[in-house]
Length: 365
View 1 (cartoon, rainbow, N blue to C red):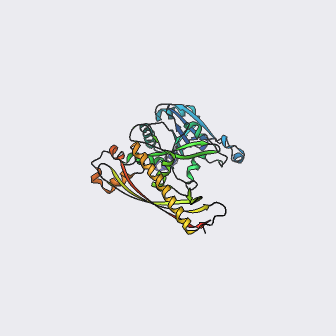
View 2 (cartoon, rainbow, N blue to C red; view 1 turned 180 degrees about the horizontal axis):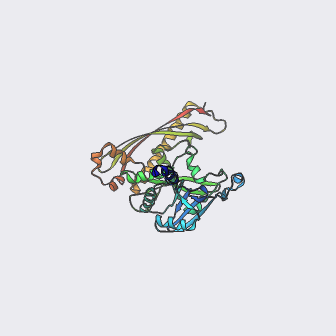
View 3 (cartoon, rainbow, N blue to C red; view 1 turned 90 degrees about the horizontal axis):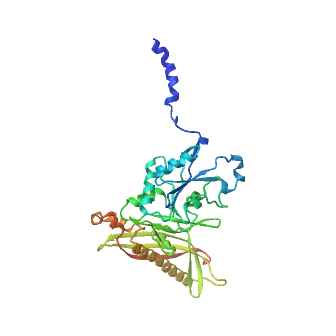
């Protein structure tokens, strides 16, 4: 009888200990990391929102004061986390990590080690943006822009707006990791260059199985974008007779067929591109023949971009397009004769066909 009398009281006393979220901290006790960068000199920079800002003052605060950075020196990720936590008076949280910016000179092995360490941590989402920093991650991470709307993080919103850019070169962490673990494709990340008023992305870094990353030139990067279906609404200037026509809203679709042949990857790529005539010289009346000439010239330019990317890949023994991966999926028995490293470094023999269509809008209609 005594046990029955005390049982309800014991349960009530134990409830606070068994309910969920008992280990959660209030937001004012959390230091939320939105961006992180790593240099080749073992410097780790973590960017936090400025929680001292009140809701009422958000509209009046300049972008440069929205975030603050803490930099520590450590050779490994666990050491960096320990050093950073020692410098912060709140519990560091990576559950909202949006950006990881890496030194462009970090070798493939170092990048893989960092990515694997973050994946092993658990609470960190694998959807954050991965990028290489021109001039070093610290200055890039704290960069703001007049375009920034409080309290959003500029580097993240830049890549979040996938339809804002003519060529989509973004890369999420899980994509880099998947590429690095898949034979037949070289992982890459966009090179982010600071400019007046923001940033720009026009090149990519391609990571071989071992060694330092290779910087793809701008024309080859454009070709890479066309070969992988990343062109959304680009612009081309083409010669038509003695005039210069500007083609805009250039988009595409891509079909790839790959197989193995004589210690190489043979690939047939068909690019169907389209766009409109946005600008012509004053007084020029666009005829159907001019449209056909513009289409042919645009196709030639795109093909030249694509072939330059393939030549660059063969020169650097990389395959950022994943042609060897496609061939391996289609012909797994033949792929088994190559090691994962060898598969990614096979020469590429490509036949590229480009068809361009001028759509019925713009100044030509």
